Length: 535
Image (tube, rainbow, N blue to C red; front, side):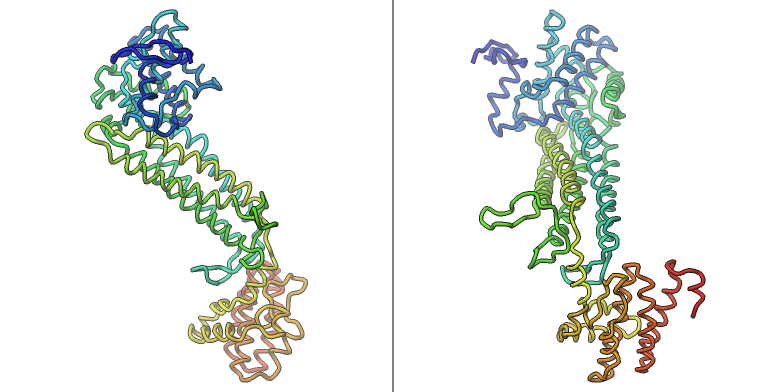
């Protein structure tokens, strides 16, 4: 490889002949062969915007010649449009803690390009870095890059995820599934209710991240080395923020106190905490999807996720929930990034934090990962899953927890007795034709209503009155579940027939419950005014 000789304050150094950077960048490349990873492209782009805005402000304030200021802006724009941008920024993430190597990398590249444009020597320090220090440039760039990535990638991705969930919730609103607490059967819920809970979680995280974004708009630029603004023009901070706002479209402002933004990274920690909270939300959604999709034979099998790829190298036909699994891994990485950012922020010793490149990388990495996986979760898992209606009905119709609806009438202990007996005895032959006690609460309107075997079972002699009451009350409970499906007319017909059964058997409790249910049902909007007037 051909080289050229470059010189800095420490002496001469060989640099690749074609490289736009100079000696200080090459020293960093030589000193930090650690991870092989450079700072994210989003950070480098924000850094170039910072340099362009600083040049514009310094030119307007006559701190540097206007032609050189214009050349710096032009060079920054050329780099931003270049497909080979990142080859000019080879410095490892793990470098000097202030990020000085990356700041000088940008200064040297821009100075090299400007010298060619102006046909005169442009200094990386005296011109490109005029009125600036790595100590305010890098904290500023962390805020700018994070604000831009929130605005341009993560928040739009979350809006897409939320909208997709709400659309799916509307399409599955008619499906009722067994609710679960502690992973155990609980009272039924509409599938839409589960999904709308997810949507509201995502909406809340958008609101919190939007509030956090407002803190990112306050910048350290103008504080220079330690926060005292040494060597910066008094008007520079305001002129810089005005120029940067014009470049980015976001309303940046000088920090109220430069010392807090140079010596600490509290805002980055706060934003990262919100990203961690979002990650835990995505884990919950992903795991709900995995559980509902589990099976297809020995699991819950309530939904079927889109088949995207073979799931096993040895088991033919196996398909796995790959998008939810990827989501969980992304969330785990984001939680790890947050831990690193938290530890890095503790290294704000006196007037400067010395973990800035690592904080920048982890913060932007978390945003990028969450934005990308949110789109995938929306488009390749939530939008495309199918509901297994038969499996939902089979579990729901056998769920003894439905007896919870009778607590106000017969009390918790008697209801528990019914539930335990139902679990112990299991379904009889007649019950297998429907749900528990032969009654399926999830029948369609065309087949709803007690069958002949249902009525025969209720009216025929059983072991004792307690058994008859159990059968009747369980049927009443199933009717209440059917109301979740909106089948009000079907439930009305069944209540009428069961009231006759209850009267015949002399069960006052059942008659009271049926009368109460019937009264509320007749107030349903499903009935016409004339029907509501009927006894």
